[in-house]
Image (cartoon, rainbow, N blue to C red; front, side, top):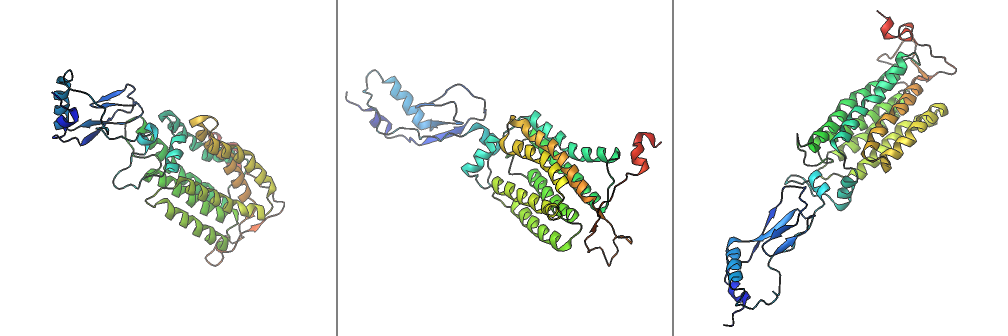
Length: 342
């Protein structure tokens, strides 16, 4: 009896059906009806019920029927996915697909929940650093100093919320579809640009023309942040430009001492941010080192003295005058410390 198994199956539907394996920790080979897929794949192809029935009948006749090699595989090849990027950026119907460059960016910056908690807690350090220095009598806060420090402190809750949100997602408590394409991250980076606009005003001594130019760029960068297609490398570049823009007035004023202090802390922080030498904890170290940068920036704003009549409605837009050879004396209350104030 010359019967070909391909003829036996020709009258049945052989359209493959793919099912997704939900567990990302599957390490064993997952057997399919017509072969197997590797453990790195997250999908397993099976045949339709009709084709599986035909396959069972064909196996019963295996001793009688010839078994020529099929001309084409009965199951389609399923592309494998990177487990880390899939778990972090499982796109949805409303989310634009990420490019390979973005997927690679996500894979390199994948962190554990504990590391994300460290990121959140380390965001408290810069503001606490400056407040501690202020309280210990290192300097007083002028009008521009208050603006710069207040804007930095206002950004902290958004950054803390984002990192805690990612930590809860990694722990399986509050799932997040994508760690770089979400509202908390956009709010965090929006806050960074708002701080940059305020810092440009404070470090330029209240120069309205320069502040408006810097604010226009930051507004454009914020608009890009909220586009449907996320571009992390472009967003990082815009943040870097914002930093250069608000530091430029310090160079123009030749405030070399505070520039040197900022670079002393900023360059190691930038290295940790870009290269991740200590793995996922590098980002938390970056946050800590920005405390020294913020302290140098706040110290630079103390070189401006407010007009004698203060910022009135007629003079608020005038840049503050930079004082030469001014020795800043802390107030007695802060010099004594809050614990001694009663």
